[in-house]
Image (cartoon, rainbow over all chains, first blue to last red):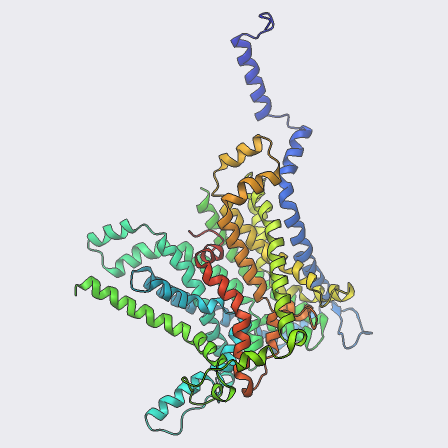
Length: 330
Length: 276
């Protein structure tokens, strides 16, 4: 190499700083083409998923909003037109829809709360060591793995049925045992349909809650608990001051995911009661207005109302998840 | 017996009781599916009655074309195809979000999750009208696209948290070496994140297989799925109890098998990969 052109150590250092400054501090007004391309290259893998989601989920919602302002019943195809807020007026003054709103809230709150409590209890039980723990866990998650419609059919026909369901059958056997020939024959699904639906859903969702909470319990460091025990803390104190705070994130996640799915429940209501006697929730009501009554305008207005309610729940839920994200990346 | 051993066995007994109690309805479902119809509908219940395959024979009775086979095949096709598409779309998207966070990564993530919180019932009518006008009613491809979109948000979230655990240095080094995206995804991301991908696939398969509302409104005779086939039993009366139970068992079987086989992955998946 020609010694005249070979750079001294000093010039090399200067060049190096210039280069780094160029990389770290590019001209603000016009990013070089290469950098823009790089930014697009980074974003490109995201785009197909984003585009599909916007087209398949957001466009239909826009359609629903548009149709909600129309007079449109499939049974009267000639009488179609703009109707302003009529559908919303009808929907909001309809006592059935109001009761459906109440039902949705009751069903979601009760199912999520009860299954969360059961799930917590079971997770605490399964967290300890005992014979056949793996088998018990498998037994416990089975309800969650039964296809929802199949589970609903099981409860409707094999358990709740008044004349041959297992519940009344078991009662009959019990009554016979004590010499009575007059066992109760309650028709569970028509006596209190909402509770009947809720019980079947609690059966399905308790395992889900248990799985998330169990994972939370098992990620807890055992030495703190050991230390607390050595210091003389009782089981309740350990649960209250160590376990519960540790489980907070997992409890929140369980409630969030549970409510998102239970709020939208259609299968159980459709199969068990077909919305009978105060058990119709919002999703079933919209389905009913659209599929049975063919009132597209009204169904869409109801759909928009469901959407608004869900958004309220969702924004609360999203705030929860947001706190999770913050903890993950400090 | 020392106190701790006594406590441990008390816990075991209680846990076993709870486990059996929760399992009882399912056990009853399986037992009833193997009973003769007269025994199935007996009151009080005949637990020790003769076992038979009559219920299953009845359920599959219609032959290849009219029985449940087309519905089961449709469910399998829709769930597998949707799962495959979900992975093809979610893994690159999650890679973009996890590795080199673009500006507003969080907004994008929340957009994904928010679509999951919107009830599909509020999108039902436009989807139905579109399908009718585009002559896509009763077409399995429409379901596949919808199931893909339905499972995509959860899949992106799960995959992002699994990918976030791969050391950044590996991925950045590959990017600096000039590896193109497909190479990075197949050579580095896929092998390292294989368990996460499996969990994502499992969840996507289960949710697609279980879906009822969209399938019921948008399909019919040709493309009806297994859950839609099951709704045929909603108003079934007493004499078909064993058949109804056999149907419920058969349709649940793929999900049960997948779920039992991958219990741990199920937990990770359901908690969006956030829980370890």
